[in-house]
Length: 449
Image 1: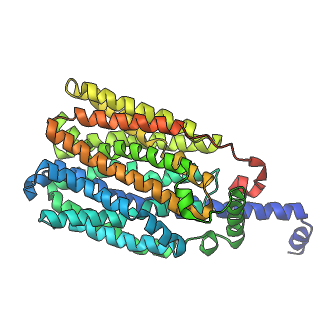
Image 2 (image 1 turned 180 degrees about the vertical axis):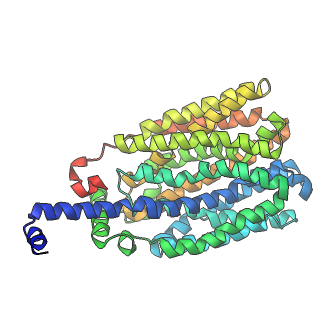
């Protein structure tokens, strides 16, 4: 024991500092295993309750409720109107009060509204329910992105954002399989109830474990929390805090990102909500097989998102990584437009490429915002950009469905989605690339983390 004490007393200051840095690095590493899984599950549940509507339509929602194809398209689009209208007020509320509590309330609300979708038979009540579901879910994405800016640095943010947004394709991947099976055995109405209630239960898990800031998390050491918060403050030293939120929202780069995300989301949500119907009619498949085929594009999306997020953080490049994938997605959808009536196999392969590429650059895209705008308005800017995306989602879900109803085929919808994605690729090219981050300011502990 004496010899051990003597060896401890004889440790050099450098050795002690190295040990402390290692401890900090190990504690910081827990963010990837404690915080991100909770964020992933929460966004995944949100995506179940917005994307399963397309399966309900494919399974005969319109026939059950005695509504037209145009009415079904309107129901799909009303979600996005509610999603569009309340994002900025929700972001302000979360920033001023508590992100974790706002998310808790919205989890309970959207789980309830999603379950009610399966028990409401009157069209106007269902329309109101879909709108309120959009309102409840409108807070989740910008608030989550804002939470990640409090927990992850610039060199980690593309990967952290990617894990969050992976909740989208991963959810649709398993949901496409499970929802198709459930609908075939339970019917679409019971399926909506079964898939809505888990969000309510998860709300109590969320509020138990997630905290707004590193310093408040019990699973992070105080030293690690201090290192992380100091690093995040250092990143913002070159960005002047905003005095008036409206001035930042009207900046040219923010407006450009908003327009770009509108076009991007028009293509994405037209794809997500109407893919099951397109696949079922094109392949003349059962709901179970439709679900399996609809899952394939999202498997490609998961692989590409992980790869692109990693590359974006390593190179510290954003815009130059985003636009090629969006362009490729638009071209692939144009290929589906050309072959939709000639070969389902070729058209479906094009859909797989399009689905993978349209999701791939989400991580680096949302890493752009905290690098350009002051920290005190990041939540509002992200909410505005995502609001424009929600508006694009409304037009995408409504117009693609309307074009299918009017023309009797999928080709016009393919063309619309293709055009919007190609335009989004062109718009991101107009945004100037930010210089690479200065890596010399990182401590050894941070490099290890």
